Amino acid sequence: MTQKPRLTFWEIWNMSFGFLGIQFGFALQNANVSRIFQTLGANPEDLPLFWIAAPLTGLLVQPIIGYLSDRTWHPFWGRRRPFFFVGAILSSMALFLMPNSSVLWMAIGLLWLMDASINVSMEPFRAFVGDKLPAEQRTAGFAMQTFFIGLGAVIASLLPYLFTNYLDISNEAPANQIPDSVKYSFYIGALVFLTAVMWTVFTTKEFPPDDIQTFEREKLGGSKTEEGFKEIFTGIFSMPKTMVQLAMVQFFSWLALFAMWIYTTPAVAENAFGTKDPMSMEFQEAGNWVGVMFAVYNGVSALAAFALPWLAARLNRRLVHSICLFIGGISLASIFFLHDKEAFILPMIGIGIAWSSILTMPYAILAGALPADKMGYYMGVFNFFIVLPQVVASAVLGYMVGKIGGGASTSALLIGGCSMALAAILCFRVQDEH
Image (cartoon, rainbow, N blue to C red; front, side, top):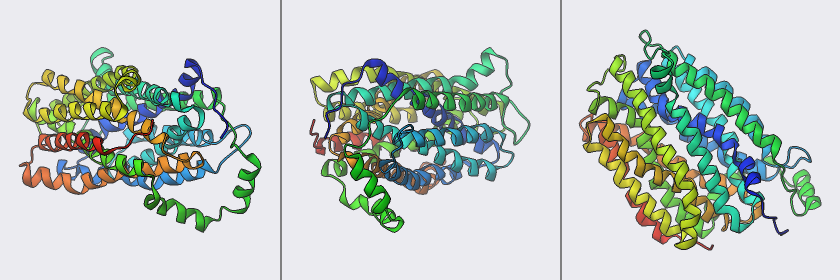
């Protein structure tokens, strides 16, 4: 392989800036979609089923996009940037439409569209780091992505709260309608998503494949549709050993995160605001407060991203990831015992530390264990172990909350905390070839 040149700080900044927009979209989705669903009449026990759109679209879209981007090359657009471009346009449209949902089925359909579109942009960004950076800069590259993920999520999560408390935009609406504070947040999110991703598209260049002639011959002559789909959906059985070990860590980490994203709003509404009624003013206030909480954990994540490369160089990536996950697991589980809205802020600090590591360390470890010509594809397959736990959560969390947790939404967060602590233990099985 051709030795990749070291990139400057600002070159890494430009190639990562698009993640600011991508996480703007994800943060608005994570903090507000349960609120939108319940406002339109959803039962809390049915929320995991409605959220299943997110993991299923990821399960289908990410390996396909990874496979296609590995086999794409254009002298101007490059390999990954065409997917950034198309995904940004579709995602911005979905973000604009989501808060204008008038009935529950419309919101569920738009979640499918929004999540699929965000995945089209997001999946190639992970392979982008492996494409452009030499091995010694990859941890820093993923950490820069984590910084922008945290920054974008802080701003996006706070928007409904800021609109309500500082710009006097209504946080209430007639029954079965979305408040203006949420609508305007999604409109800004659509604009930021498009602008940030386009910045990366037009300020970053890509390296051509090492052997461009061979690449072109294989692309034109050997990539039959049937063979392509066979490779896409059988690659899970030929994963490198390190990837298999990391997969289990990812599974239990993301099971915890999905429980948090689905159930934090009803949990805070029940424990701190004393309501289960999604039509009440207190429930909408709880929704805004969850935005503040999510801003805290994402802000901590953005700051922790700068410390992770330094810690990884002095300890090792596996140990750092395990410590961060354990801190996050204890923090998430502690929410079960809290009843004061200000007290909910403290666990978000520990969750932010774990979130920063989840977005950085597994990808930094994995990038060194993958063949360069299948980087995008295997990054997509690796995301099976982000979406599979979400499918599991969608299938069982509602039952566990209703039948085992007595209907208390905080019980889902206790389960999530235990799951993340298990992921911390499983880290010690991972082989990290630095």
